[in-house]
Image (cartoon, rainbow, N blue to C red; front, side, top):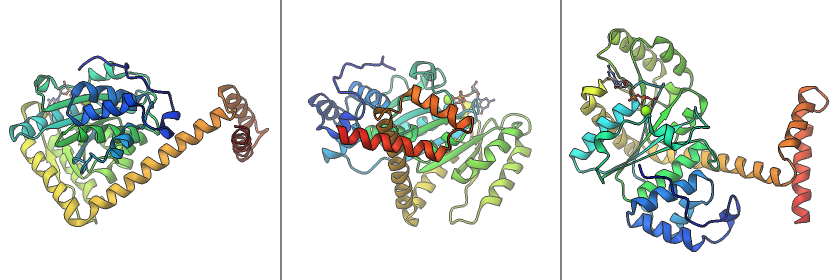
Length: 341
Ligand SMILES: Nc1nc2c(ncn2[C@@H]2O[C@H](COP(=O)(O)OP(=O)(O)OP(=O)(O)O)[C@@H](O)[C@H]2O)c(=O)[nH]1
Ligand SMILES: [Mg+2]
């Protein structure tokens, strides 16, 4: 992984969103389109920092074509997600398919890319120009992590990668959001982790297109598979019946079947019209998260700073102020500051 570089001169925050793209960003985007990996890394840093709407600038060049298919690999910490990605990438590479990988960790907002990078086991592909790997945490992402993740994937597509893989850690709501950017979501669980399977049941089962029982070399694999199948069957009723597959990522057992299942799901998405519906749902998610983010920024510049926030929270918690009243007050302050500007 190359070191972070923040040399590209841009304005900060929301200003760039409205302004014409600076020449620095435009030429950076051109380099990304030409497949320059250093430029790609820099552009991703800009997205992470919320410094520019890089993906929009990219689109405005008219150069982007169809998004590369996005595979989501999601599940509890240590389930073997990175090992699966590594094995899956090997399958893609054998057929000459290039792969962009994004590892997202919604559970550790304070860790930067470097720490997160340790979680990723991609050593096998480190010298391969057909594989690009990047980690991202929540830090500073404009419009939410899912939106930022999608922007990064747009860039990877522009840089020419054929397939995209997003690895997400954790079992919380954020993870479900990030999983929402994927066309095909693989939920990874392990045997002997009955509680984990239970814990992910709530949000994750609905987003799973393929269920992977990894570490099936460990004791209890059969029982875990039976549990998983029972749960997945309970969720069915749609046209796509999510398969349950057993894998051993470390010895690549079951990876061929996983690859086939992903390709099958990808074809089904297009033949069923589900692909378009997914893209619309994603557009809504990106719109909402960015709008929330921008409104919060407007409130911040309208006087709703940290001190004001603390005061309001205190007043709401002690019952002196209603939460509706507090929001009315913040909105009134936004309007006043807009009139003044
Ligand atoms: N026995 C066994 N071990 C595995 C298997 N797959 C992965 N492991 C091991 O499990 C550990 C965690 O694997 P990772 O691939 O890093 O798991 P992860 O889900 O990406 O972990 P985080 O990113 O930290 O959440 C490593 O020590 C792997 O070697 C498997 O199929 N069987
Ligand atoms: Mg990992």
